Each structure stands twice: as C-alpha cells, then as structure tokens.
Image (cartoon, rainbow, N blue to C red; front, side):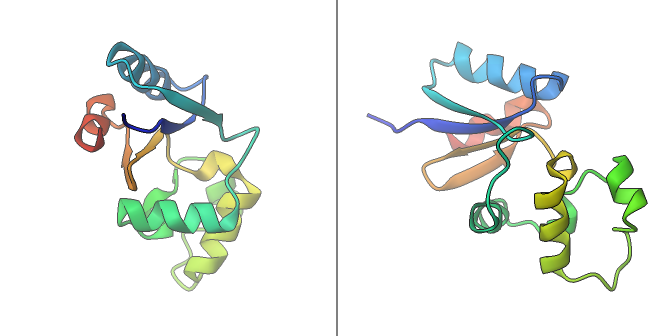
Length: 117
C-alpha cells in the first residue's frame, strides 16, 4: 500500500488542475494543499528544494509581480533570502509540486509527475 501523494495546488492554474486530474485518473490518494492559503513552512520548502534538486531561484516564478517588485533577480541575494521571499509571497513558488515516497516533481507538463509515482 503506497502512502498518499501531496500536491501543492493552485486551483486557478490550468497546469495545476490538469496535474490534479491526472493523479485522480491514476487513482492516487492525495493530500491537496492549496499552498497560497496554506504555504509550506521553511523546513518543508527546503526539503522540497532538495527533493527537486533545485536552487531556490530555479523554483521561482520569475514572471510574478512580486519577483520584479522585490528585485529578486538580484544575483547577490542568498538562497535564504530567496526562500524567505517565497514564504512571504507563496505565489512565487512554481506549481504544481507533487511529492510521494520522498521524491518530488513539478507538473510542467503534468505528465512529468508520473515519474515519481
């Protein structure tokens, strides 16, 4: 019996909705976390970055207003500062993220999450 997958989901995002539908179609048991309402804590976000093998900047949505307004493209910012920015403005976190069995994948395209199931 496999444990539940977690999806960090934004219902307003078409890729997030498509990924959720794909997981449901595959019969996955899910914990759906609407991360804009319930953002991860710092330890969780750091763990997700490790599972994804990404730097904080690689997980950021660079087209978001908060990215530009807070000058987050500044290369002198530390990983800690970028993580703090994502925690303060969860919209900056790329979506959807699916976690299962200690592995994580970003649903872009949605089918990419199938590799961790």
